[in-house]
Image (cartoon, rainbow, N blue to C red; front, top):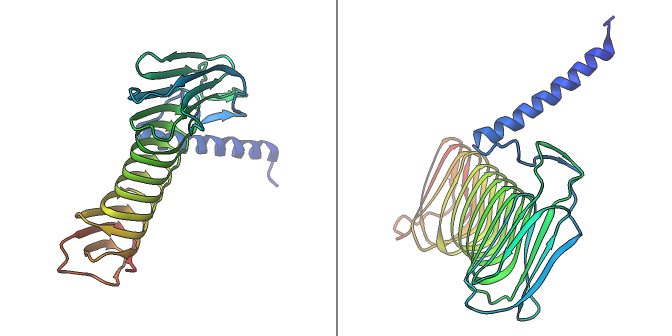
Length: 300
């Protein structure tokens, strides 16, 4: 009979927790983004409903830059139902600064939280913009989600350390995320760098996407090109229409492509199968597909 059974169970639980913590820490250190101030281990973090700042501005086309920086909270860029810009900041005890001279700059700093955080409410910044805004939107966030609605003429620049990113429609976007998913409904041009998370795109013309760990899914590439690299994860494109030579590279995962226009596909995999239904060797546009470990399937 095993003696001290409760002690053994306790040790197993403790060692399991330590092992999980080490694995999580290793992932972040390998991606070069580990920071003990990163809010991965926050518990009970709700969004503040305490409105501390609210202001409306007349919309002018001279407003060329909007920048928002948070260290812990959510950012939302919403469509305005009138020709005004409105800023709302929700917070409990954070420092915030709004500079509306020439450009619009918003900075919110939550109190420092070290690794484990309990019941610390996240800040929230909401900016309402007319849908015809056509200039630059720059968003930076350490921990929290980012949501951008429909601004078809605007240029978007996002830096996210930990959180999900959602964009409904934009002209051009550069998105960098360390940990969290990225979803874009529609864009003309995308430049995405993801360390750990899935990337989902509905419709895009030209896309440059790099992912270290996670799947990449695109519904439609329309009249453009792609440059896609994935270290670990599947790549799926349902509809692919290319007008320029393109590349898809995967180290570990399957690559699946559906409909294509008339293109030449040069595909090879070191470990896996290659299946291309139709290949136009005389086509002017070439798609190069390389895979180290995984299947390549083109059902065009």
